Picture 1: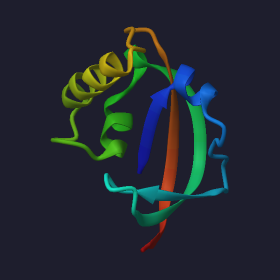
Picture 2 (picture 1 turned 135 degrees about the vertical axis):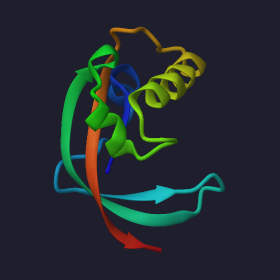
Picture 3 (picture 1 turned 45 degrees about the horizontal axis):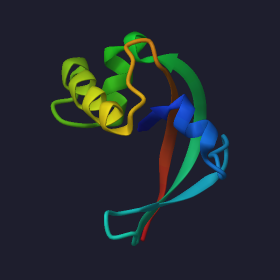
Length: 98
């Protein structure tokens, strides 16, 4: 499993995930739903995301096309989108469902 975010946004966060560390994931109502353990962090660019990376995020039909479309929309709303923007990709394991 994986998630990603804009490097610019990630750098501005006070608390950053670290490999081996745990994070509580909140739902849209700010209620905890699970705990994850970060297994890795790496930098990539938006235009270098692979089909395998897109599939790890587990969204939509798991295709790279779907991933690009939805992530471009998200990053445009955030004001950070550029085809060559740097992303922090986080891989993780589900540790506990709350």
